[in-house]
Length: 560
Ligand code: ARG
Image (cartoon, rainbow, N blue to C red; front, top):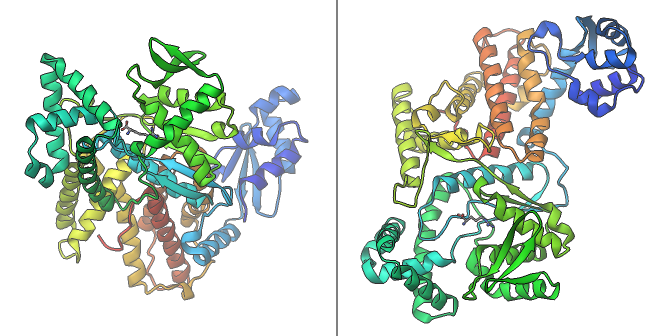
């Protein structure tokens, strides 16, 4: 099948190797208007090399560029405009989608390799924050995209189930805890006493000492402390699992921070053996160049977040034999991961350079960070439930006779939240707005889902099945749709390369737009000779929309 590479090769020959292929590839543009061709190559950089005007160069090159898929080449205003053989390409794209169905776009670059992806990783006994929602949604999409690129993916939930907050919780529980209430609504109740702890500790510092002591007891294996910890963990996890079920997300491992308790001595020993461990004010640290030292053990001998991450990295490398590891964690932890990777590098693990922090920006509400510390929390389940409710209302207005309304409201509501998060580059902060995410006409999940559902309805009415597929005879109006479909495999590869699900989300908007424009100008079900090829195009769009949404972690209902 034709792709950009063939055009690049052809230009490369035409310029007699004066430009590197990679430069040509970067220079080639996709013109905004159809009369300027499918690809355009600007000749302004070459003007300096050849000491001729861009116009003249464009004319010379246009005489030389050709291959089997090029229809014609024109030189206009210093650009070489390349027109492709639309019918042949359309035939190739449609038949490839119809024959491979959801496998269309599958890449091989990750074949035979394993990648571990650490994502979601909420903290036990604390609410699932919007930051964790972002990590969950982004991480899940990156994991799906990695699979589509051929990788074996290990999804790891590095639960925050250890650390000084448990000391605080144990103290708070003894002071104000209510067993029944916690059983009923663990996260909410535990948060309540956790918030109270902070309020009271602001006046009375001795509470912090008690909490430190309680955590130390826990680390030393005190029976009662352990039991409380286990109960907090189990109850919270059950609640988190409801959110994962709602979002359709699963993990291969829930090995959280506590899992590494008996694996940290080894790390400390290794560091000591290599002479990397140094004492600083009674604490043990690894000193690093150009950044603060990495704290390994506190003065009181307790270990830290970083120590557990070191043990986890070693464990994962040994257990999964992974060639790559992603950590999908908020941008505010950048320094932590820089330190972590640097320490592993100093330990001379070759695989350390394959570890990658995949950071993301904040979720804002009215321009301010949505925070959990002081209890101003937006509980994630409430957010999702609000979205589902609003989706239900929209559906009620648009399609009151729809069957399985509730099920579809769920898919549309959660899809809206997920898409809203993923449509911008992950480093951007995003403003949380239910109305915006559920707008059926905007750049939203429901818009893409609705486009898909509309096609499904067309296919039902047209009684399409793959046997009647036809691949020739599309009108010119179909071309932008075909070109967009053709681009999907490239987008899949790029989305992995950049660990950037927004590539897929933006692509889906573009494909939906292209299709809806075509749909507005074309009578698809009109019974003429091209009816079957039009339906085949529709079916192809539906396949790619469904698969693209799946990569983002969103379902595509056939009706809505
Ligand atoms: N539990 C941590 C937090 O909520 C995130 C953990 C991320 N993963 C890791 N391996 N450090 O801040």
